[in-house]
Length: 384
Ligand code: UD1
Image (tube, rainbow, N blue to C red):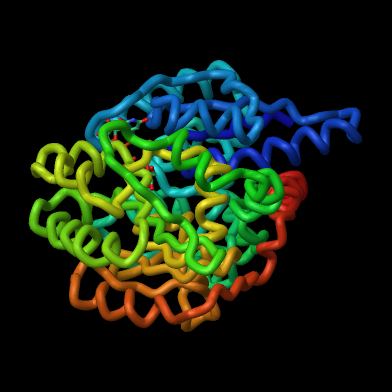
């Protein structure tokens, strides 16, 4: 059997690493092994957004890089399809495996099906119901086309059933991101928080940090990258004022800055103020282990990332999700998780920020978030 797996952007790398491990393990014990090729579309190309993750998670170099780079959605999707079509025609795989919801996921699932190749979607069935999110469009198209839909939780399986997907296409396998978290947890635990900050600090900031209060680390951690939060000057400026004047006043606020957020801060004239704000610590995009380590001891997380919502659930970090909806309801407090939706309205963010500061770290583990999802993904493909 020949499988092509596809990655494009940062959140894909932690999902593909365990799948590749599962293929390697299978090949060790089965004479008729699986021929596996890894394709990187090149949507994320910076060392810090891409190759650093390959190294840290021990992902073999991509066999083929499509080098699509930045661009509008249509450019990214179109260029990926044109380049991936050639790969599929030359390699003639039995399966194309796509993960998550980025532009690479959409482009390569469409291309696979147009070439009559079976497609497996890992992390299928997530639905935010928000058609203004580029990722929701990507999920809907990919799930509509895929032959095998591997879901991370039962709510996602149910979403697919409601859309009329045939039962034999849906397999509940658990959350493959958590495979990576469990495999890397002990390595992250050994890292020093001070060393992470020193190593990743964006130059030009006068910081005098005291990271401990009564012996335990006290800091907030945040990330922001969604167009709905960072692309509009008024929305971004409102969140920004809250972060600087309230959160960073209470405790050190660590902010690994996504390239999109940085571009927008520079464009909206916020970047210089951020650099000189005492208490706000701007960091380069962090490596996987550094981010995991900071998350393990953060007092609170503020984020619009879906992956971090999931990691906070398993680690128990109280999390404010700066969105009005989520495709990952299993991570919300009402479903037992650690996260609460606060949108981008500052009154709401402030209210939940205050409530959340008094809540304790409470790790939970949704069903089959057990570190073994990748094995189940491969089994589902082999048994198809
Ligand atoms: C993409 C994904 C999103 C995911 C996010 C995680 C889609 C539709 N969106 O959004 O689902 O949560 O990645 O990071 O696929 N840039 C760099 N260096 C890089 C990569 C990007 O400077 O290595 C710049 C680009 O030039 C662009 C901006 O960052 O201006 C945004 O990159 P883009 O690939 O458009 O999407 P993300 O916002 O990262």
